[in-house]
Picture 1 (cartoon, rainbow, N blue to C red):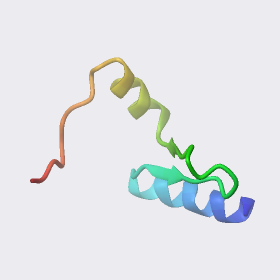
Picture 2 (picture 1 turned 90 degrees about the vertical axis):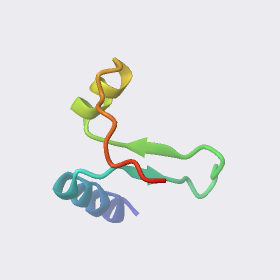
Picture 3 (picture 1 turned 60 degrees about the vertical axis):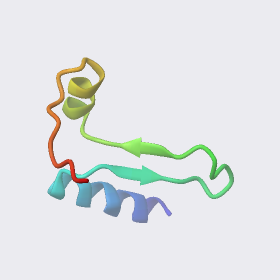
Picture 4 (picture 1 turned 30 degrees about the horizontal axis):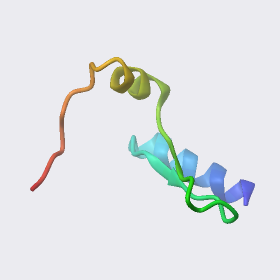
Length: 54
């Protein structure tokens, strides 16, 4: 499992995407893995709105 998570995180680093992770035991509590700089921009309200579609 750890190897798969590391592989997914490395892919996110390459693509710049975010990763949603679900716990097999507590699937109702997913979490998102994202770049720390992007998270800071998002949490401080400085994130640009991009890539929106209808």
